[in-house]
Image 1 (tube, rainbow, N blue to C red):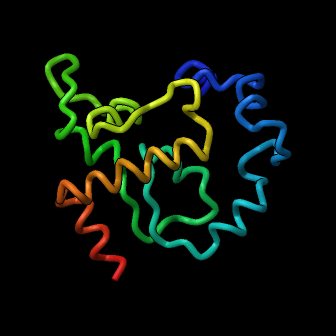
Image 2 (image 1 turned 45 degrees about the vertical axis):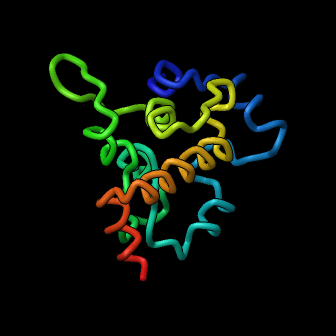
Length: 135
């Protein structure tokens, strides 16, 4: 219910985003994803603390484009900076964002990658530290 409220991910919206592709009904039983991600140790995500709960293993290193951009994007709410959404972060970096495509895994990954590259190009210290650790 919370995902529906926040993201509008109803069963109908999920089916539209999946384009009739067949997926496991529940993320936790998606063996294709578990196989794909088995050897990945470094994860980049927007609001990664939410995503970690669904990952098959705990990441060795994680990078959150949401938290790392809070003081950069600077959206005030009740006197302090709020966590920026993926759309707000993308727009801050001049990245076009299509709300109709949002919450599709491939589209969100594209946007996330563009944000991370923009952070790197801007020499964001947190992004540079994360990349240095990969070497």
